[in-house]
Length: 279
Image (cartoon, rainbow, N blue to C red; front, side, top):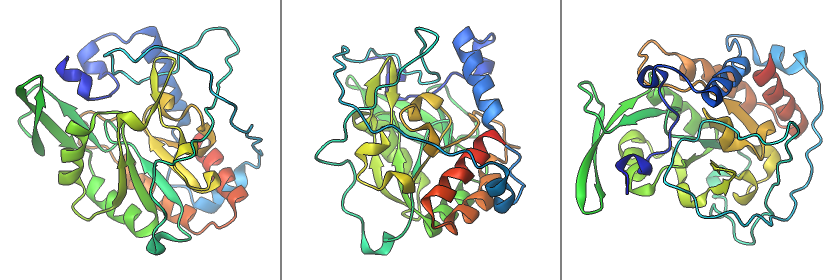
């Protein structure tokens, strides 16, 4: 197995030199979705009252082959100009355990790992926050992990407000020990890995309908639009992070989520998420 296949991440433009056409589209999408986060939650709430009609999930007859060992999850593949996204039927057994009493009434926030909270590399990094040994085909490899600026403050605040779930398309043998080191406060009530994703048209998709939570109370934070292609109306996109230590994305998100926490009506929650993406 290719050592890089255990980690699902987008490509660092600095390493590529020249972005491919597909990567440029994803980058443009991320930039267009980013908002000025210093606006108040109520300003975002009333700036846009476009309603969403979400079609119910249809049966999944997708018989695509097993995924290749290409773990770049950066964009949505397009065939014809108009693309129909088939949402799989929710399973009889859900991915998450029963809701704990302490989380009753809380919204569920699904948080991505790579390029959202951390950046990892098999190349040595002098200022790595963690070095995680990972066994691949009988050989131990060192994974060097950088924490995104303000990730500690962000996680603690999110844990105070929501039921938080780590959901990554990377393998558990890498992501689980990273989460152990990253989440010192027990913020994540559950951890989901690649096997919990749906492989759809070359991408690992995080199907929120399989969680076992009310979909209108679920929010996903992710740098890859392909990850939430089944439920884009539930997404809070973030810019991919690699090594910019002046980045404030997570810090800027805190006031927005503090505002979301005060919203009880699902409709207004959807309006706020919509405004956050397109404002």
